[in-house]
Structures are given as C-alpha cells and as structure tokens.
Amino acid sequence: MRLPDWLRLLHIPFGERYINLALARGREMLLVDSGMSYSVEPHILPALQAEDASPAQLDWLVNLHAHSDHIGGNAQLLEASGGRLRIACHKADAPYIREPVRVVRELYRMPEDHPQFRRNVDDCGRPAPVHLELVDGVAFDLGRQVRLEVVAAPGHSPGNIALWEPSSRTLIHGESIMGLPQRGDDGRLSTPFGYAPLIYRETLRRLAELPIALLVPSHQEPMAGDEAASFIRACLEAVEAYIATVQRSLEAGASDLEAVYAEVSRTYRLRAPGQLEGLYRSLRQ
Image (cartoon, rainbow, N blue to C red; front, side, top):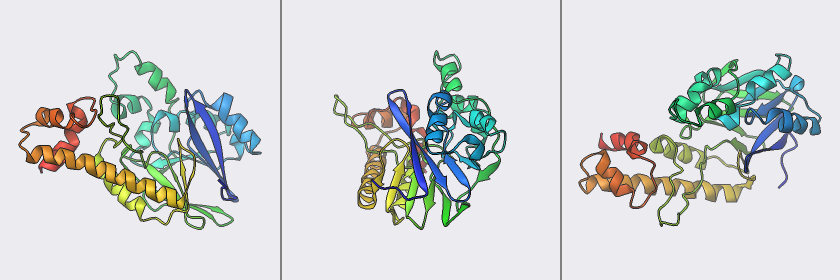
C-alpha cells in the first residue's frame, strides 16, 4: 500500500511480533515510538540509516502510550541524538516514562516478586525526560504541509493517543483500536478491551467518525479507508457486546463481583474477577 510521501515505516521486530515506528518528515522530523530497550542498536538505528536519517536529525519522539514496546528506546535515542531530541507523550502517561518501573508495577499490575518483573522493567528502558506533555488537540506542525494532530484515545492505557494528519487523512495509532476477540478451543472469547471498556468504547466511537483514508497501526499492516472503517465498527460492536453481557448478568441478579465474574466467564476468558471490577462498579452506579 502506498504511503504518503512524508511517511515511512520502520518495521522493527521484537520476539515473534513487530512494531511499526512511523517516521514523519516535513522541515522537522518526528519519530513515533521507540520500540523495546533492546531494539535500538540492532534494529532502529540501521532502519533510520536506511531512510537517510539518524537520531541527531530527529526533532521529536512521540510515544503513543507508555508500554515497553513503545517507550523502551527513549533514553538511548535521546543519548544518541546528543540531547537535542525532544520527547512527548500524553500527560496521563508521562509519569510512567519518567519512571518506567511504574509501567510494570501499575499498568501491567505485576508484583515485584514475580519472576518476570525485572525483565519487564528492563524492556521498558531507562528513565527518560518528557519535554512536552500532550493533551487532545495539540498539533506538531512539521512544515511542508505535514501537521500531526493529537487525538486522545484512552482505553489501552490512560494516556493512549493517536496522531491524525488531516491533509492525507492518515491516522497513526498504537492500540487505540485493540482488535477483535478471538475464540479459543474452549469456545470462549478473548477480551481485547483494555483497562476501561466504557472509555475504550467512546474512543472507538470517536475514531469511527474520522474520514480515514489510511490507518497505520503499530502491530498490523496499514489499512485503506474502507477496510479501516469496517474494522473499527467491528471492534466497536465487539466491546458493546461485552459490556452488554456484563450488564445482563447484573440484571439477572448477580449479587456481587464474584457472581458477575462466574456468569461472564461462560462467554469470555477472564484472568480474574479484578479484570471486571471497574466495569462492574460503573454499571452498578
């Protein structure tokens, strides 16, 4: 699929997956996300070089959200830039970038005695400054008619954002759209609805209104407008079905969180009752 002239994608592997780092060029140059901490030397620096770019030429690094695969290389890229690079993220996720151990402790909810705790912290990289805390509507005017507007898109994390380029109608996102539930061998569905399904639903409703011509996800191949619109609608229908299932369990008389968990688990694979707690409380109000 042809990308706009101002946009290049750095296809960066990590484990069995990959992440697309978007490189946007006007008169200024902006990189979206920084991969895992171990991605920089073997993958990101060569990918930048292949695009005739280097960390020293980057003006901005924008993190779409504070998870390890999006922020892990922040400190290394800042150092490689000679300190000129400016890092930006939504204000709600800024504390996690400044103190990455909090990503694992608070966003991943992993206890410090977990055998993978330290490895996950290392994947998040070293602490890095946030030079600009973003809110909805802030724009990066890169020049040459390239303007990236911040779209607050919480759900995957409190400060999750997408970037909208209106002239080409391109939306760059990192799990603002979390995909469709998958049915397992036991017949139950997965729950790719984030930490707050009601908030995520509102994000999908907002994104569905954008006249998207090109959708650029972090972990999938780019999609043309019609495909993107269908995908967003399907994801919206999926989260609405999940919310409705929880609502029905309450209306049928489930008396507490444990009872709701038992009922909803007939249809969906849930890790623990705590996964439902926020939604349970909101629907009971």
